[in-house]
Amino acid sequence: MTHEQEIAPVEELKAQARRLREGLRATGTELGHAQALELVAHQHGVRDWNTLVARAGNRLRLRVGDRVRGEYLGQAFTGEIRGLTVMGDGAHRRITLHFDEPVDVVTFDSFSSFRQRVSGEIGWDGRSARCTSDGKPQLVVRPF
Image 1: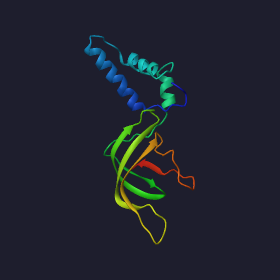
Image 2: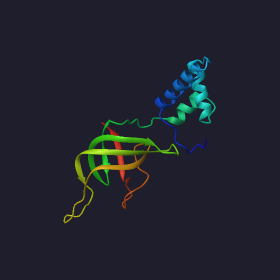
Image 3: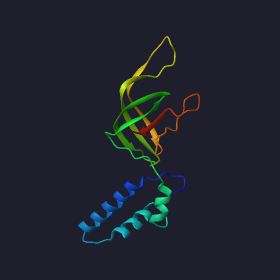
Image 4: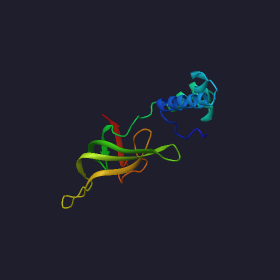
């Protein structure tokens, strides 16, 4: 694992440890919770659980069905998460949003283009890596 790679939120790391314990228990191997946490840390390529938690930091926790707010192409929105998938590199998530009200993504007075359901990629901070021509992220998602 490289230091630049993003790490899942702490809750997901703890869930990995629980699944590991349950899987091993099913094969007859008992493992303490602290041992499972340490093994998850090793799976992520770090020395111990405390190091992994420090690297994970405070990641934005989002789930399908969550109400969110943010900006899409510079326009404010509120809506609901309809889809959320961790991308293969682990550093990004593909998110599908359904806005409460359609958002006009065109800034011209004489033309409009409304979107109510959009998909994009965001990092664990809720921001897309892709930016608009003025340097702002195309998509910013925040929980309510």
